[in-house]
Image (cartoon, rainbow, N blue to C red; front, side):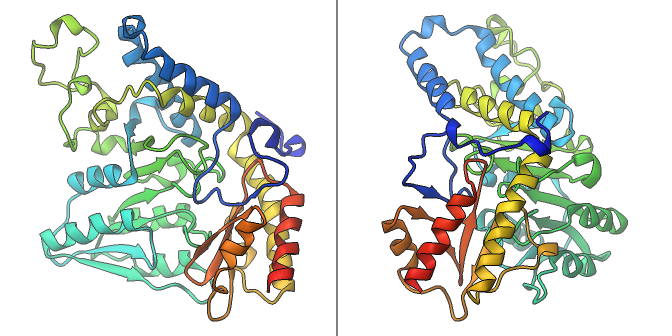
Length: 382
C-alpha cells in the first residue's frame, strides 16, 4: 500500500488537459485512461458472444465484490452489486422493521435518493421522518446523536454531506444507534474510497455506494453492503443468477428455492455487467493500492489550502474539525453570484453550485496549481 509520505498527484493516469481545472469529482469523476481501454475491450467482446464463457458471468463480479469488501473491512459474501443508490435503499426499506409512531432520522438537505424511500416507508407504516436541521457550528454528529432515542427505528445518513462536505462521525453515530436499537443505513457515495471507513468500526445495517464519483468508476454501477444479520432477507427482485447452483446452466430449469450464500440474493439481475465491471475493478484495484488513508491525507492538504484562500476572500467554510478531507463548500452571503459557475467554466475551471455554496471537490488528479487557478479566477470575477 502506498505510503502517505510518497503519495503524489495521479493526473498522469487521467486524460485531463493542462488547460482544464476539474474540481468537481462530487458531480462525476473521470475514469482512468487504462480503464477506458478495458471498457473498449469489454464492448468489443460483444462482437463475438461465442467467446463469453460461463465463468465470465461469475468471476469478474466476484472480483469486484472482493475488492469492495477489502476496502471496507467486510467479507466478499457481504457485498451485493447494484445499479444505483435508490436500488440499495429499496433493499434496505424492504428489510428493516418500522412500527407506527416510530421515527426515521435524516439530515437536512440530504440527497433525494436517500430521502424519498424513507418518506414512502414512513407513510406506509404511519411513522415519521424527522429531519435534523443544519447545525450552525457544523457539528452534524452531535445534533444527530442527540436525536437518537428509543423511538428512532432507522438513522439514514452519509459520511460527508453532498452539498458542502460537512462530516458525520459514523463511529459515534453507529455506537449511539446500537445503544438505542436503531438501524443505520449509509449512503457513502460522496466519501467511500477517499475517506477511511470500516464496517467493523461502524457496524451499519446497510451501506451503499455507487462508483461514478469518488470510486473513479462507471455510471450505473455500485455496491451494497448487507450486515450478516440481514442476509436472510427479501431481495427487491428474483433473478436466476442469485439462486444456488446458477453456475450450472444445464440445470437452470431445476428451479432452486435456495439462494447463493451471503448478500448475493440482493444483487441486481444481470449483475455480471460485462462492459462496466472491468472498469470498476480497475478503479478499485488502484484505490485499494493507494489506500484511503493516504488519499485522505493528500486531499486534506488541498482542501485546507482551499479553505484558507476562501477565508482570505471573506467566504465562509466549515471548520476543519467538521469538514471532510476531499469536499468543501465556499459559502457566499446571500448565495453564490449568478452565473459564477458558468463564468468559471468559460475559463475551463469546473465546480458545482449547491444551495448557496460553491462546492469544490478535489480528487487524486488535482494539485496545488489547480487550487491557485480557481482562486485567481475567483478574485477576477468577484
